[in-house]
Length: 435
Image (cartoon, rainbow, N blue to C red; front, side, top):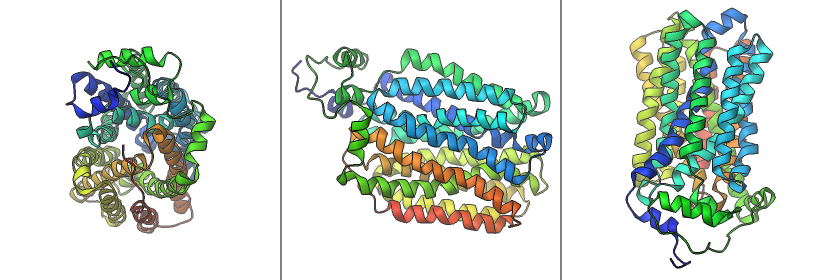
């Protein structure tokens, strides 16, 4: 086959094959486990705070440790994924997620749990941009927006699973059972990814690591595409320093700063509400099961919101989708702060909140992804989400400190919904680079 043949264009132009769906379903499964792992402590919080006698500030700190880990993971793993490969980054993150969840199950106090959640967060943070990027790169042009949206929609599936597991195991196994189950999920996905998840075709052709031609042709054979006789000219240097130098070049620097600030504001509101809602529902006088049930309904709404967002993104525009869903998310956070202890009202709020949370997450991810060329996509997403994790850390932490200072729930919800609205305005000005 002539060397001018571009398998990426051939892959994008044809209908999706079953093997491509498999390559997307593995990142989908990984993100589902991410959703379970990240909210495991929030699901365990109503019981754990009583057993360990944790105050609001201490719980807020513990909830933020996994988010701090996500900051470190996104900072350290995403450039590695762009220079050494998506596949080894994913495998490494799965190991960390398993170790962190098992460590949490074995922890005997505040600092043991804090360290375990930090390790779990590093694994999740490194996976944030990597799993979505590889799904996007193996999708056809027609499914380019849907693939990462499908990955994003898997996150609430994981939180639903976490809710049902929490209800099932809390009485018999206590809060530790939640973490044991999550660790097993991550551990099972490790050999699955090792055996069936290939390296990114985009990475192999643009970065050209050792034996890139042989590895590329092996992937092409799985995709039923003709083999290459030779690799195309390398587009970018194959080292982390060059990757970072590219992303901070003058033509990309302002875009990076703008999207990172917007993502930080979005994450502050997002992780505030999903970490504190379960506990606040129980404090209305409802049962622990009702509090966990609220998070399940948020996740159900998130599934529909994420999938619908992926379907309509190409029709109404990614930036328009992001703007309206971020404002919708802010409105639902403010509404939650005003609701009485009424199950029908809480269920309706949870469904709408979940839809806005995960539709906006899809929109934000796509907005950042399209702001950079393909060879910088994981690094751009990694840095954008890394800075975003700063906001995520301060979401639950700020709520805990505001509660300790005597602020009421309605005021806290109002204050912590404002960042989402600011993010909507900033994202509207983001650029779009052709994929």
